[in-house]
Length: 314
Image (cartoon, rainbow, N blue to C red; front, side):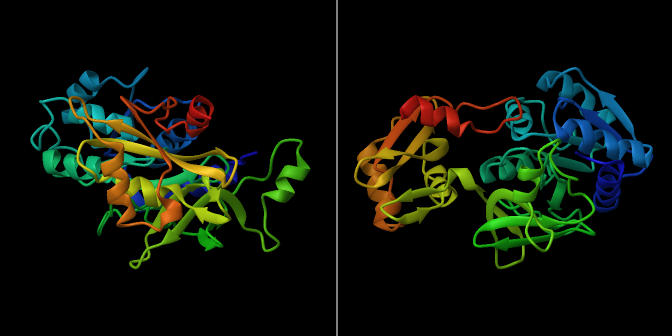
């Protein structure tokens, strides 16, 4: 249950942090059945008086034509990978843009760097969820660090306890509709909302998302956070991206398993990949099984569907 106060406070914080004014023109190609398109994109425009170029869906060719007319684009990582496939994308085409925002799914550091090289713009990544709207953001002015989601927005407190991200502020849901039990379970005694996301603050104070609590793998009694392994695999030549999951194992409880999307025309060897990981990880973190695929399954917002992978390979 989201109140007008929840939504207004969050829109106010985003307008302030992202410098929205009535002079802005936003390309809105996000679905409006999701908080990103329904609230983040529209409410910042409503509150600031900015204009929206409202599209029925995302089409890279359509957006390419609109970029010279716009000042802001909000999207999911898929938007940016598809734009990078267009030869027309360059600094001149994006000369009128002041801000590119990405969220709803993790943006690969490789995509972040490639986009900045082509356009001169560092994509701004942020972090939120339906129950809270936006919680953190990389800075508008200052370093936008790939692989991080920045710092807490004004008026919001974000803490990490035992690896779990918890949030408190005027943006937090009033609770779950007709579900007092779930509402109570989602809040700490001091009023923080338990997000279910795992993370940590880096040395510069930027929040890094490790994954969902449900993605945590417990193998042989040891906790394994998939993000650590995925980052190492993603950095290997020939890898597009990876997803690390836990699958049932008679001896260990769960077996660390990697599903790796391979670049077209590339051949990867399991043994070589395992050998490289053994030099960088504790033995219990090294995947016991590796599957190679053309691409990872995603939902319409670009999130990798680990549940589907567990069902496929379980």
